[in-house]
Structures are given as structure tokens and as C-alpha cells.
Length: 354
Image (cartoon, rainbow, N blue to C red; front, side, top):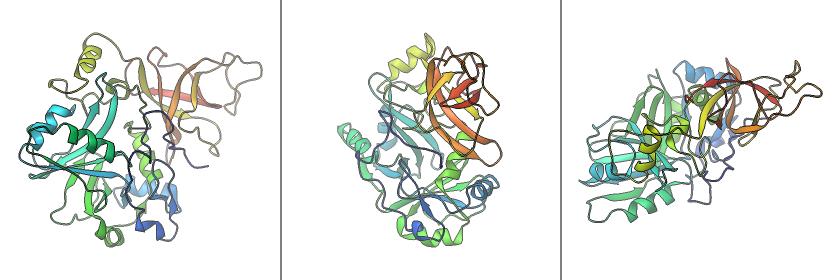
């Protein structure tokens, strides 16, 4: 059974929000197996999940992320305007410097996650599949007198990911987000097939997601729900700048940062038990039952079921670590408490400090 990346929780991206990108032509390649929501329209894998993971970890190959939404902002006021709307400090963002940012509700809950770069004349962002329509509607409502133009570029632009260490060439004139994890290339969609032929081997989204889970990196719609605040999943610093103001939801961010603690925290789980089954998105996480677990990870006979303290957000099979997952748990769960993800015993590592 493949890892579940269902976005069933409230607040998750939905194909009903807006059209996702067109189905990738790379799905017609030999061995390609189509992904499931939220990664429909691209390949989950090309026949060998662990080989694809190892290739990415070694800095070779590419991942087709052409199902992701692409939004651009142009105009002389674009960075100053975005600075007022986003959680990140972007008013003086240098050309070519990658960043990420959030759009929050008035109560500080995460509504969108944007992965940004400015090329000197255009700000490019890729977002979760199907969410670009709602994001653009919000941005359009906030234009007022600013000199900006917002456009949905999903139909003509495909995002591809090159892992860190890749020596693959990037076509001249395209926008590129370069981070510690690799490069996200905003490629003309018409060039996707030819670029893939030149810069294989191809890796699917399951390999990409396994390395994301290993890196403890949250994803909107999987690690978030309708009440997630940035502190809970580790977005403070990477996507939220604490020394800027003037954005919706700032009061909640400042209050939690200075006076309180987030009600939940993201954890990394090492999963025991059979590799045949992985707990899907939303699987309850409980304190391990009194009496412990049997050798196969299942509760011992007569053990009292522990209380639910959270839920699995993403699970994956890793080529070195085995079955792993991210989960959201209550802040007061002891950092050394043994847990159960569904019927599977789990040892936790701290991602967000309690």
C-alpha cells in the first residue's frame, strides 16, 4: 500500500477550489504511476521508489511538480505590496533570492503557503495544487491603488524540482528558486517533455515527499488544517518574519510568540511494524497503551488504549530510515512518550519544541 497523502482534513487544498495544473505528459512514460490527491496529475513513481529516492539524495534526477499552481505578480509596487499581505519580509527581496511566505486569516490561521522568488521584474510563486484561484481572488481584492498585476500562470508554466547538488542546466531566462534542498524551476510547460528527457532519471512525488518528511518540512494541507498557526509546524523563521508588521494575522503571531505557547506541535515519527501498511493522513495518534506493545508493534493483550493526542499528517517509506511520518500532537505530550499511530508503534523526535 502506498503512503497516503490525502488532504482530507478541513482547510486542506481541494481540487474543487480551483483547477489544478494540466495532467503531465510525463505520465505517458514507461513505468509512470499516477499520484493520488493532492498530487494528482503527475507521477507518484516510475517503478522503483527507493531508487528514485537515492537518486534525489545523491543530487541527480528531477521531480515533475507541474501540477502545482503558479502565480505571478508584476508592476513597480509588487514587493512593497506583497510585504503588506504576507508574513515574510519581502519589500527589499533581492532578485534571485528564494523565500517562502504565508497568508494568514484575521485570527492567525494559515490560509496559503507560497514559495517565492523575484527575477527583478516579476515575482513568481508556486502553491498547492488547486489553491491558486482562491489565492488570486484574495490578492485581487487587496490591490486598491497599487501598481500591480496578478496572473495565474499554471496553464503555461510547469514547476520541476532539481535536488541539491544537481548539475543539470537551467534554460536561460526562466525563474529559479534555489534553496538548501534544491532548485525549483519555473519551466515553460511546452518544454517539460524535452527537459525531462535531458535531465533524468525521473523521480516521483513519493520519493520527493519521503525526503520532505525526513527534512521535517511542513506542507500546507497535510501538516495544516483550518486552525493551524505557524508556530505549530515550524514556520516561524522560514516563512514568518518576526520583526515586521502590517499583515493580517500578525497580532496572533506576536501574542503566541511573546506571551503564550502554541496548542500543538509537529513531531517526526519512526514507525515500527510491518511495511505493508502505512498510517494515512488523519490517522489518530495516541499515547502508547498501558502494558506496552508486543514485538510486532501491536498492543499487548489486555493493554488499555491510550488517549488520542494528535493525528498523522504525512507518512512515507524512506530508503534508509524505513517507515516514517510527521504528526501534529498536543503541546503537552512528553517528548519521550511512546506513541501509537493507528495500530503502529511510533517513537517521536521533536520538530517544534514544546
